Structure formats: C-alpha cells, structure tokens
Image (tube, rainbow, N blue to C red; front, side, top):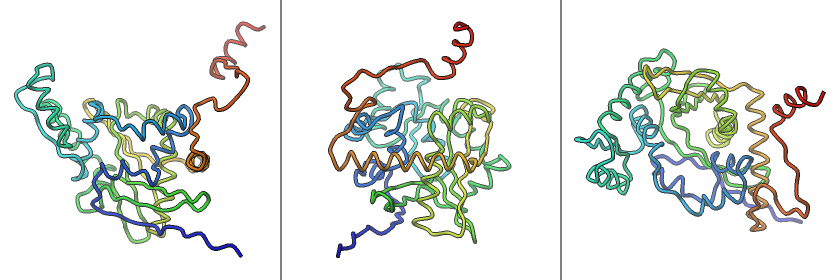
Length: 288
C-alpha cells in the first residue's frame, strides 16, 4: 500500500512585501512559467532566478502608477530640482532611492503618473473597478498544482470579492493601449498564461462561486487612453495548456537538475527557416 503524498495546503497571505514574493524559490509564478517556454528556455529562466537584476528604469513608471491607483506598492520619491538624470547629484539621489527600495521620479514623471491615475479614476469602466475600498491590493495566493505537485503563486493587482463573484483586475501600462496593440501584447507577453494561472489560483485558494479576470491597459502618452478587456475563453484555454506544459518542464528540470536551452541535448544540427508566414509569402512569389 502506497502512503499518501502530503500536499501543502492553499495559503492566502496579506501584506507580504513584493521583494519577498518575487524572491521565493519554493514556488513558481506566472512570470516564471512564461519564461520557461519559447522564446525563453529553462536555462535562461534558472540563470535569471539565481541572479536577480537591479531595478530597471523602464519599470519605474508602471510601478509608480500601480502605487498611485492601488494605494499600495513601491514608495514613490520625487527628485526635485532636476529635469533629467544627467547630473551626478540627480543620479546619486536616484540611486539612494533604489537602495531604499523606492521608485525615484523626476517632477515631470510624477506629473505624468498623477495624470494617468486621474485618467483611470475617471474612466467609466476602469474607475469603478479600482474604486478605493472596493478591493484588496497585492494579495499573495499559494497553492499546489494537483497534476505535478508544483507549488504555484499569483499576486493579483486588485482583488474584488463580491457576493457570488470574485474579480481579479490587472493594471498594465503600455506604449499603445489601442485594442489591436493590446491583442498583440497578449500574444507577445503570453498574458493568456497569466490570466489562466490567476483564475486557477483564485479557484484553488479562495474557492469563490465564480471568477473573472479583467485587463486594464493604459497608454503612457497623453491623453492616457485606456482599454478594458476580458480574454476570450479559447485564449484562456490555450494559456492554461501552456501553463500545464511549463509546469511539466519545471518539474523535470527541478528533479533532474538539468536546465536545457532552446535546442536541448541533440546530436544532429537542427534546421531553421524564416517565420512560417514569411516562408509562405516568399514561396508564393519566388517558387512558381
């Protein structure tokens, strides 16, 4: 008779610092699962996990908007007296803020963040979703995937628990928030995987009657236009299937200690061609 395998219970954690959440190596997040699949690979995922990178300037605006809208997140420090980071004094103050775990902003950037937050609050769809006091920001959810035994985690930007329905609202700053650009971003950044994992995590931990995942995209340029969308069922199913494959890959890598690159252990040099659409287009033009 085989003994039952002990499975760690689902867990809901409030107030967990973002740095601790992202540094956790005992579970895997949506970002990690996406990184395991092409165009990423296990070898790059493991290196990035073991060698955390310093703060990147391109994330400062998004982090600041999250704090302004959600009321929680990184502390924002306005570095006054400078119009850019060219002067040594400005860079010194900026680096001090980074060392303290804060987001440094120039006055013009702070003004931009305030305008973006105002645009969200006044938007007919996004505004009510993020109404102060109507949800919980940055709640960390942990559960064990039943198929692989891998511990998973998600951290919804904004979680609204209502009678009969739980809403997870995800806020994303983007260069272009028009629906076509949003559609491409879902493909390029595999946001359909994020959607599926967050929905599954909410089901596993909070056990609501129903779950919906809402994307809110806001443009970084004035007038800071906003697109609010829900993913199609088919794309969520694809995202869930991608997650399942990534979880199997992760389990295999963890158990063997082998983290392959894109090619894996082969003895023959593989072939490569242009992207399929370009091959079809050029074949029609030249191989007549």
